Each structure stands twice: as C-alpha cells, then as structure tokens.
Length: 240
Figure 1 (cartoon, one colour):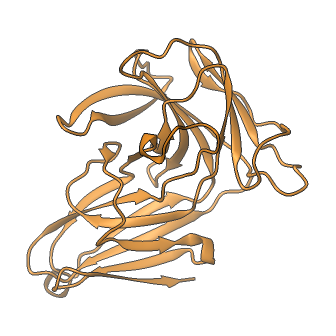
Figure 2: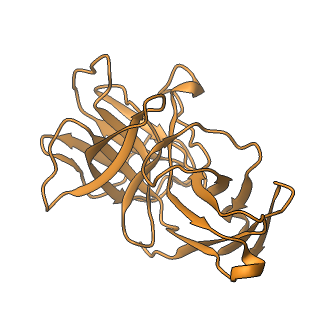
C-alpha cells in the first residue's frame, strides 16, 4: 500500500495566543453499536500559536493519509518494542494513562470486495494481523475480527480508526469498545476538523463540529489552510 500525507496549516488572526487541536470526523460502525453516543474521538494534535500578522508563525499539522485499523489496551503494560499513546479515559477528570496500541494499514472494501480489507485482533500480547481479504465487510469500510474477552464496567479495550501523525505517533481517532467474539465493521471518513482549545494529542475529546474548520480531504485536496479570524470564526481553504 502506498502512503501520502495530509497537511493542515493553522493561522491565528486573533490578538491573543490560542491553542488549536485537530480531530477526525466520526467513523460509522454498522451493526456494532446501540447508539452513535458510544463512538469516542481522540485529539490528533494540539499546539499554540500567536497572532499571524505580527509574528508570521503558523501551526503545521501533518497526518498520514493511509487508513489504519487500530486497537488500544489500557490493561497491558507497554514495553520499548510496543507502540505507546496517551488517551484520556474520563472526560470529566481528564485522567491520563499510558496505553499500548497497535495499528495496521488496511484497504477499504470495494464493490467487487477485492482488497485486503480486514485484520484480526489478538489480546495477549496486543496485536493486529497483516491485512487480508474477508467477505461480508461493508463497502467503503474495513473489518476487524475481535476475539472473546470479558468487558469490564470500565472498558480496557478500544478499536477503530487509527491515525499516524508526522512524528509517526499512532493515535486512536474514532473508536469504540468492541463487541466480543464478533466482526467489527468500520467506515472511516477522511475529513478532519480544527477547533480552538487545549486538547493534548491522544486525549479524548467531546465530538463537536460546531465553530470548527472543516478540512475535507475526500475532495482531492492534499493541504488545507485554516484561518482563525479576529471575530472568532474559522475559514478553511483547500489546495493541491
């Protein structure tokens, strides 16, 4: 599979230094959830920047455009050979824990069902198999075979869409606590939002598209320039 990058440039035209963060449009999880409220979202990057006119400074958020299936466990301790990510598991207390993550590049199912559109999750140790073709996966999505496990009152396992940023950090972007012993179908959307506020990379965010800049990479653009205007509104312009 080939990989390329998306670029989001953020410029602040307000008179005060502001924090901005990036999050992805929520994925769909057909037949996997009782309600959309069960879908969680993570911050893919956060940085502060001063007034663009006076400083010339801007934020450059880089994201891998490849679609990744991802899994995160808060149960296992992480070693140097495993991928580490931070995630806030409680939006009210903003508690942060170290978590073990795994990701695999996957293709999305086409009408003829031909690509390597599925991966299999293992739990001990946490891992995802090399992608393979699997029938029955929804068109436009990928599948993940979730083994049997015992969900606790507070979930310790999350699965869904992962993102790679320009530093190669793997972060769960749009995800759920999966159903045990089932095939999870996931339809990702390569649409991202920029919003004002401090949400550290990997922390859970309340999903809210209001008063945010939309960067829709499904239209063919590779770069978006996002401007935070002095009146508190956003504008976004796509480029090659």
